[in-house]
Image (cartoon, rainbow, N blue to C red; front, side):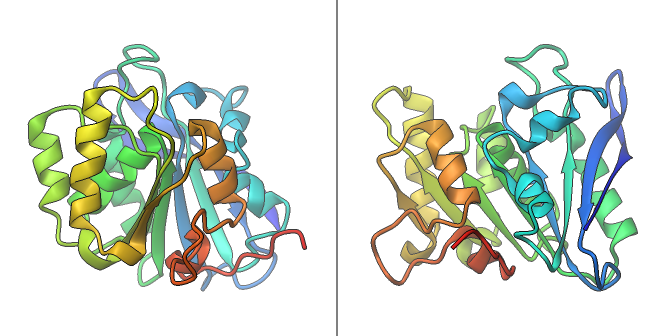
Length: 234
């Protein structure tokens, strides 16, 4: 296993690149599947000093560093908190991420997952690049920023069979969360979606530790759905 950093060029207002953590398997780096992970709101940053935040909640880069994703290259960029922690959005970097993945990993199996604001980010990405992303998994994704974005996501044909969705408890969610989650559920096959009575952060830790989060036996965990080998503890 090899851990390194790189930068991904982007063309966003005031931002020219994203600092990125890369975890590669010990063998077969040139043929391994590629997993893009997009973090949530609170893990934003823009320097090497804050980059470890992308591993919070036992996310895929953390799992890869433990050796649990032996056949996968994990790419984990960090979004800066611009204009602030509340209002930054992965949508501003989707074009750069798509160009980077297509250029760096041609003819490779590319999948993506994200948590919360990153969950919305992977839905934005697969909507913009449906032919690039083979499958994606959204863990407790936040609602779209505006009706135009919501319509673009909901009309994406890649939702039908290539998207895995898990939502947590809704006791403290506002109407925007409830509306967006309901519409997403309606768009996905029943076997690809579910809810669990878990808090927002518990959803992330369970999903990225390989739990299916569902009692139904016909529902896959995140890594199985994405077609990745996961060797968790036990």
